[in-house]
Length: 529
Image (tube, rainbow, N blue to C red; front, side, top):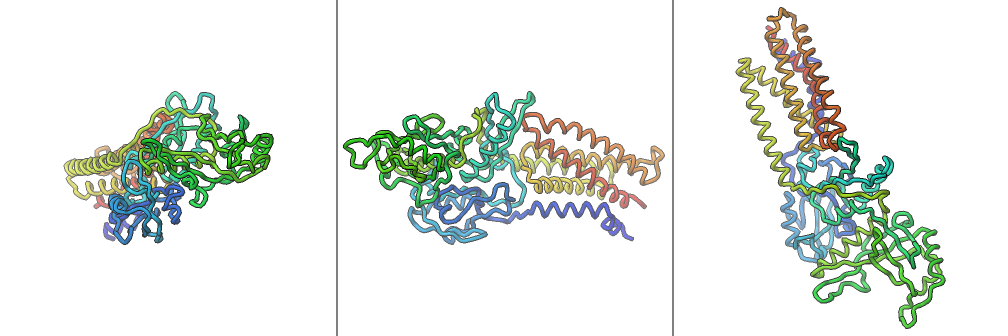
């Protein structure tokens, strides 16, 4: 039987090849993929009305919908998307063809923040070329660390995290990580990572408790989340108020928004009780009561609404909520008004957070930084592999051994990344450091095995199985040493080192269970006469 046949029919080698193929399938590499992937869709936007929806949270990158054509113009990346959208005129029909469907929408008059590009309500990024999930360090975005109030319990923090996830989901964001972390002293924090560049109101949304109350003469009528059964977010019952619209006062524009909500029967009855003894303001054509419905957000009054005369003493479940926005231009005022409306709708749906949070740190990470890190990482890995290959060739004078050691190391790297992809773990800077550590430990173990196989006779060990067994004693000791060293890092450093620890543990475990046994069989076949 030839050596090649011996290698590829060996049970341990077959297992290693099976896992290698399975992890490559999980990674699903496609370097030639083009398009602008949909990261999220703004609720009540032109895109949302047309039927385009945000991807499911934590969906595999390669399963995400991406834009291929806009008005039959090929979209290869995010730059192409913005160039085409920048050429669009307001109120024209736009056809968007994705890999899943064709949509028709009306281009709005509003533009994206800090730009002249029409805001279709789609947040995009270059279509991913694999299922590898990039962490914030590599794809860019916003990272915020929040400190709960001093008397917050574990249940309070858990409920807050659930509420924040719901709040961000309602807001239309999908690439979001919300989790609890802690530092070395045991202080608990809430970490939020939002991929991509998002507006300031999103940062405010995650930091504010969002306590909403509607009062009549200091009597609370309804509370956001608790007493709200339905909040309209479609164009037919929400948007810029058609009765007042936008007006210019001196050098500023002001626009009012309006949307309908449905109250619980208890809240409707409280409104009836609060209005039954109110008087009608004399001299008004509209017929308003002498008290207003005051809206408070985080104990700050944000608006006062007149109460129509016909609502006096009636338990009405359908009411309208309004507010305003401002800007130096009409478009800015419309955008600010709709932004405030969307934030208020989100809080009315999800309610206030159980506890107050203090912003400890906020970082905005440029995607350009991540691209630079990836380029440098690949360059360093290439130089390291080349250097190690040269050293191994010089040490053993056997090109086959050096080649197999490097191929095994690369296979171990692919298996580790594939496994992390399967469990949905993000690859960030800490994970990259863990990958390098795991692969380095793997190559070191293979060198130990090779040296034992070549020079075991010096220690009067002539049996192949005994040589490999001696090598595995050393390797197993190293594995458990690394495992013990990594385990404390799972709970240290405010969670920052967790990615490093998990990646390293996964890498060395795959090595000791899959790649080392396969390498032992291969090296035995090659060196045997």
